[in-house]
Image (cartoon, rainbow, N blue to C red; front, side):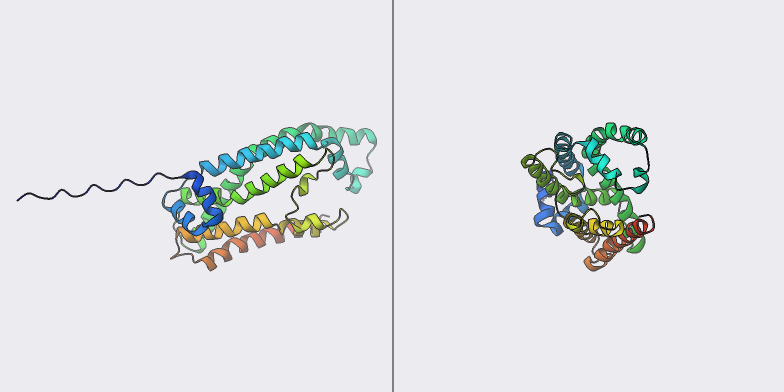
Length: 248
């Protein structure tokens, strides 16, 4: 008897990296489930690096680093006690390095942030939830969770393009956090707290929770994932605020 040949297994559909970038914004659960099955990270890192480099370019075009760094230094009472020559010497290196560091951070900042979050939450979810994740899963989730920062970069570029030199505050380029509403005379601990209450960071941490929950929902429900992510974030904020309060 002739045997019917078994059908060949269907080839897996190719990963659409660009669709994943938009997917984490509009259908994050389904997108992170796909990322957990077939991790990837290059596309979001490259896109964020390009946008970050664009922000760096406009910052270096619009910001007078000498005046800005001098203004920030003057807020320190110890700096005010220095002679003018000492002040110039103290600020000289910072002013020279500022444009270079701006470009470097713009180009690799997203990759460093993704690596940091991947390591922290890879350990946290394996330890506290027993998720059994591989590092590639964690890095893919972390890289795609940073996509909202690209929206912040785009807004920053638009804002800087519309403003003149000297009108830009690099610390609050996009008024997305409470710190942007505080005056320069606000206590350091309050400024540290306000800068932490940021729309984009809350969005990013929410995506991290959704992503790690989608990677292994049996071990980490969404509620548990939110507790782990925002619990660690709260510890970091308390440490930052406490440090600013002790060393104003």
